[in-house]
Amino acid sequence: MSVPVTFESITWGETAGSTSLILSPRATLGFDLAGRPTGLYENGLYTARGLDGRCLEKKWIWEPGRRDARRHIRPLSPTEREALRGRIEHLLDEARNAARTGTPVRRFVRGQERPGRADELAERIETLTVFLKAGWEEEPRRFAEIWNPIGILPPDQYLSLVIQVAEGCAWNQCTFCDFYAARPFRIRGREEIDRHTNAAVNFFGAGLEGRCAIFLGDANALQAPPALLIPLAESLAARFPRLARPQVDGVGGLYAFAEAARTAAWSPSELGALAAAGFRRAYLGIETGDDALRRRLRKPGAAKDALRAMEKLKSAGIHLGVIVLLGAGGRDFAAGHARATADLLTRAPLGPGDFVYFSPLVETENPAFPPLTEDEKADQRRWIEERVAPRGERRALYDIREFLY
Image (cartoon, rainbow, N blue to C red; front, top):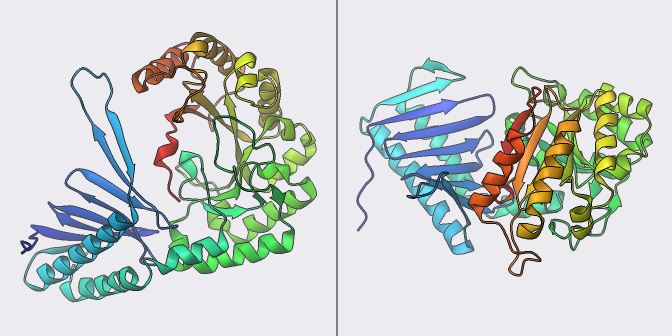
């Protein structure tokens, strides 16, 4: 027999794009404005849920003898996902009962405290419970009808509205990436993109308020011709002014992955027109500045091509998201990888509005090189950063295991 959960207080928070329930001191539940659960924090463990139904368990673990905390990330099995649904439903039921029996209720709307009423909270909880019963399995099926699997996004774009301009990756040969392995590449036509956009908006409903930018997928939206992409960007910016307009904290605008060779096919005036339409940042996986290692990774082009692409984008008024692959080449290439990458970042036209992401290589079962440990990858990042003078760019970790859309 389970012991009823008791709470000291219940705090019901509403922001411009989300709802949260803080069941002090036990748990915090998150939802979007359409009622979709986004995560549960309980007993030091955070479990996030994506729109496609996948769930990730996350936690920082501090261990003796380690300089840095270890990140625990584990996908939930179907059975565990169903248990999570039951746990959220149980907590909502306990919260409703606790409020009705006198547990203090506080309510905050965009940071301003409002009167907390148990009956209003009960109504909101009833709406959230309906989704758990009816939408937990159905919504992921709807999602799969609208989007191809979204393999990865830059960390600052996890809450964007993804519009899939292209499907897959035109190159699709890098040894370290299998995000698009089984997906033929193609560029969608404008009518198909418009239908896709309409379906995405209908899917999100009120939850669209929780999206903060527009990301043009998949692996390289600039593979689309300028005659398609520039008018599309203008149309999206006009249709979604809140998402396309830069905000105080830096989000807002149109974004996409890019690839150096394809960027060369765009003229400076075309890139300038794309920037004028609201396109703010292109994310380039430079991975390494070591050309010999690039060839081993089957990464197209040389370091000089990546540098030329960065300079061209910045000259057009487009910011950079530069992605470095920590641990690339394992121990065999570690020293050369670090030196050449530090040199490439030093020469890159970085500044305010740009990102440098350090992405630890996730090893396969049979790695091609003796791999670095997690601590050694962190040391490699520190070594590179110490040799690259900051120029106002942001630097951050990019752990692909964290991604959920």
